[in-house]
Length: 395
Image 1 (cartoon, rainbow, N blue to C red):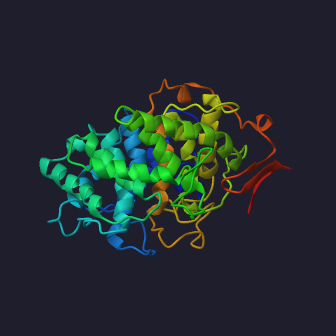
Image 2: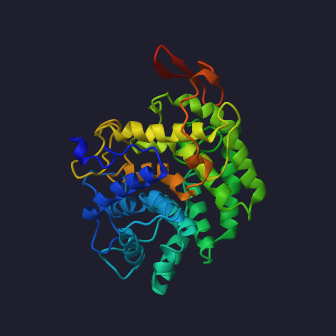
Image 3: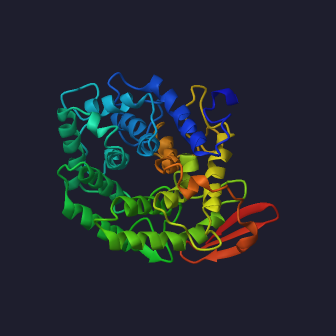
């Protein structure tokens, strides 16, 4: 693939403006794949275990992690009307061509409600307020239908939390009891020392879903959005993140590469979203990571690393794969739009330009300040930085 088709190739990705321009460059190519009514973004024909309508919804919703962050930080995007139209039409049960359908139990639609709930919470004026009254009613009904459905006993429960959080943010009916019950149950996944497993006792999955892809990311975002309503839990989440950060740093190297292990690696630079979420929640870890310049470097280096790889199609679309397009590097729940979970890495765009994450000078990886080799008890990992290599031994 020519770098000329890579939306990030010529972007230094060093400043807030750079990151905003990178996001916009990734959003622009999606227009050609967006349905007339805006509700579906169909990026390819490869199959998943869920239906094609949900796949089109996935292509619509996942870029919202970036777009809504941009809007929340005072930015604009000329293509935002595509999403406003999509909300109107995707939730309209009379629109046969665009309607997403109501969620069933353990349905992919549940997953995509998380980004939508986040959007309502942080970008109300730019998106929710632009909807018609019928559109708001339909979106309210569509999100609320998650509250009486069966869900996997995993990080998926966070998706219902964000659906209810979004509805509460726009002062629409939601389920306070379900919100509290889900949060209380998710807290039972906590193991200690900052680590949460992705499920109940007996589940031993502690990969990037424990950090950037889901749990820590969600906890940190929640800790900002619900700080007034749920202060004790929010401070607990911040404390977990401080403990986790000084361990998680070992999964990265000085070039920004994250150790490739665990599920959903096609999300690529979403691996770095934990660092951006720390900034969003205003949580500075203890030493040796007690510098916003270090956190900034950890976050941006990973995005820069991927920006120079052939991960985009000739149309400028993120492909399924890792360092290059590779259908062997996927799971049966990855549609062509799944890859835009990477947009979680754009969360720092929600911060003001004068936040210390942006105003601090980027600092290098803290090689001399951390152990060369470390054993992490909860994931049963030994991580080593030696001989020019960073590697993980898992038992």
